[in-house]
Length: 595
Image (cartoon, helix red, strand yellow):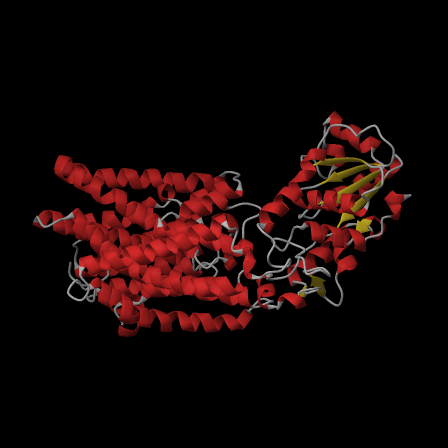
């Protein structure tokens, strides 16, 4: 197909906001729309190439996939290969285990599926995932596996139905994307909508529809009309990236506007109109030319910067942003261009080299998963606890064994713990604090505050029988209910305590860089949002009913992240390991129960 510099310019418009979005640069909170623009461009180019080759009689599915291989894999393998040494040196075992899973899934073009399956309450924070961004490659490659075959089948079987079929598929995919945004979804269901082909195909198909219209001449209009539509397209793209929107419209409307704008640009922008000339500016085009490598490099560079530092990097992220485009230029010059040239690198050399490197990378990813992130790297109890996350999840969830409908008939006070996973942490804290004290302990995750509004007679019976109620949750209690709930428990002769928040700082991975014999009693700075949550909680709950974990364990604005033996106190910065539960337990006053 004829080279169109304005499409490379549009790639630049897509990649720069994505990079700056992941670097948390103010003003680019909607930079994720750049991925939607990439999808439209990919759909347009792939459909154009396929239709041109099919109509000219030179189409080969083998050659098509060879071009995709040359375009995508060499630079991708390079980035993964460069990530491994830093992951090995800087990542805690659980984070490296997650990295290994991401490597394997990325190589199999299914990181989007992995992210869907693993997204949840205990998931590693996205900003610490060096290969998070490869989910979009999974979407595109899954599309490339299906669409060429489908297009050929329709083209040779019922060509006149090709455009209607693509429109119907796009509409169906768009409905799948749109409807769930107006439902109450779990985090994994939300991830499924965001990451997967069925809800993203409409964007690739929009580009494909534009390609069919251009091929048929439907999009060939007067220069004035083309200028008008391309200008509208550029305005829509810029609006999607920068206009303020309410949160409930943030994803759906921005995505629709950005996708529509990109579609108009690929169809109508050219050097004969203003939008096309702006996009075809030499500097913009140069960024677009290296955009694939820039996209590959930016997330690892930004993520490893975050993994390296102990506190939020802030302006330091300007360094990985700058390195992104430097490394992208080098990658394009010495990796992308040579591997795309069949005269320089034959198909045999291409496939054999990629097979060897790919097998090695896949093996590393699989072993990292099955060894739980090579915990022997650290050789001590702080960073070398095998599968700390899994152990800590099981430890947290043992509280479900106390989720009953009545207190046990035994000696000691009746203790009721209410809340989500923070409540389960509190169950462990109580058990670790008073291992020899008789307790009648019940945990409930299905009830929380606003006692009077809960009609469940079982829950009401537990409240009436409780000597002590612990309210422990990651969310603030409803202020309007606190006074009534306190009055309800105290009127029946009980005591109620609201447990404050806990958070162990921005990053724990820096522990790996501390020598094993110096890992005792390490600490992190308390984060601003954690302190704000603590202040909000203290403003809602009367002091005599407030149990502050942060006041008990933090000193001088810093929170411990390891104990005296160097054991990690939290697997994920918010929940407790057994060592964490024991430290919290030893820091609180338990006279209320012990009496």
